[in-house]
Length: 158
Image (cartoon, rainbow, N blue to C red; front, side, top):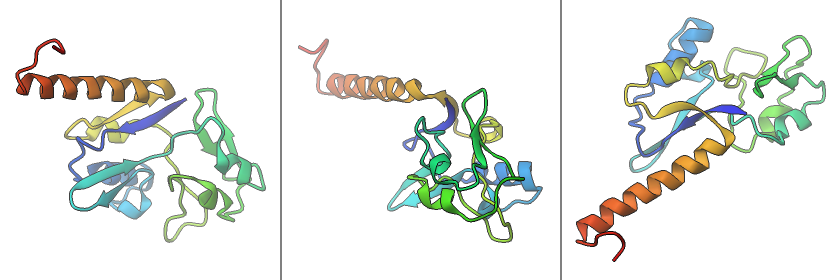
């Protein structure tokens, strides 16, 4: 299942992703209407949050009108005709990736369109698949470990 992966170590907190997203869908520059959002954890960690399209999706299970469904690509989408705006999906989301913005009656969530990925100035966003993130984390860890051991004068793990 695809989702927008964000490398929190590379994110600068510029929030351009939020602006691009809100403009793409609502033609306004407003982080409150973005389907992706950047959460700042002080002192200097910015974490972009977007729907992970969970395999066992609590949002879908919580929806009393079954307005959330999975596309052929594996992306969870909202059928606005069925949605009554109750917010059960918002409450059920474990990462707070679904929300009802001010002035709207129904929830919004990332649908993996890629607009934010294309415009990220530091390249910390990418469209990934469920297994890619764990492989990317392992690779990044090995690279950091290699740099650290080389700085200590250790070669080849000796």
